[in-house]
Image (cartoon, rainbow, N blue to C red):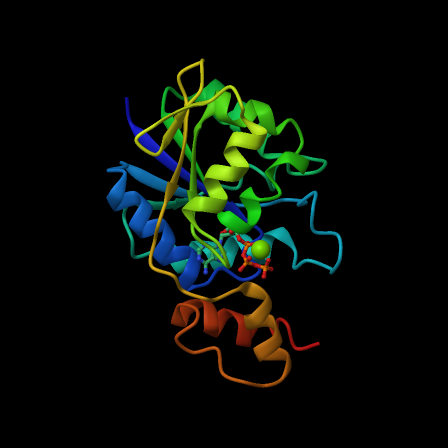
Length: 211
Ligand code: ATP
Ligand code: MG
């Protein structure tokens, strides 16, 4: 079965932290491709007006266009209502026979138990947690023992009764966030070397994040 990585996010904008992490997971897990999934209406991000889906999707497309094993999906832009990952995974499942690896940063995983039907996510895909922000493997272990007590740990990988797994995968730590990029643009600082050049040009052209 083809092994496919899924990396969701608001990608407002996508940056080199996302892209490098995606590449390293792709290599380490010997995936056949990695799909970036911009969120439609993210359920946990109501604080700030988000850029329209079409712009976040376009930037993601520009960022990956020269990398043959990277793809972008508009699956969450096509669906109404909050972008619950479990629904995205269910929809993907019905149309393919891939083995999915659902990738997220440790910051997101530490809040995993507030996600809609989070228990069902590792029934549909393997879960891969990458380092992001403070903490590492230890925090991943503690959280996993707490929210998936039925999982059996073996050589650092947690196995669930239905056959899926949860693991921590360290990637090169690039301390970049979309928040810091938006802030830099707003204060008229350069975002060169934080995002791909094509994304930097797109942001300037569409005058994003200026206020
Ligand atoms: P924001 O600051 O708006 O929250 P972000 O930089 O955190 O943006 P998201 O779109 O929220 O980007 O992140 C999508 C996914 O990518 C999350 O699972 C997040 O943990 C992960 N991620 C984001 N930035 C990095 C990074 N620099 N290194 C590794 N993983 C990252
Ligand atoms: Mg974030």
